[in-house]
Amino acid sequence: MATLATQQAFNTQAIANTQQEIDQLARRQDNTRQLLDDLISTANGVFARDTILNDVLMELQDTQEAHQRNFEEHQKLPMLLYKALRGYCCN
Image (cartoon, rainbow, N blue to C red; front, top):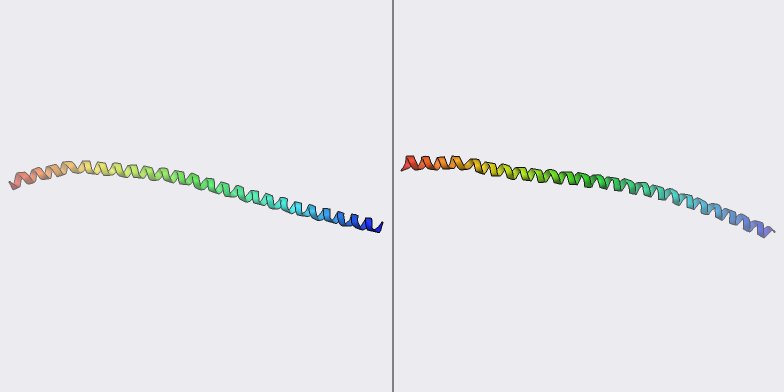
């Protein structure tokens, strides 16, 4: 009987140790899940800001190109007048 009682005590302790390990693994899994959720949230925020910044950059590029075209258009008349005056007074 002493051996059976000893074996039962050993098994009970082994079960308790196993349960502690399971509990620790469950806590670690919860912690890992929380870290992963935080990482995904951060990544989603970064991707959202990247999309917004890309839109802003595209708008700035379009605006800059429009300003360049307007500038070039507005330069045509003064250049034509300059050339006409130069031709008028220098001929």
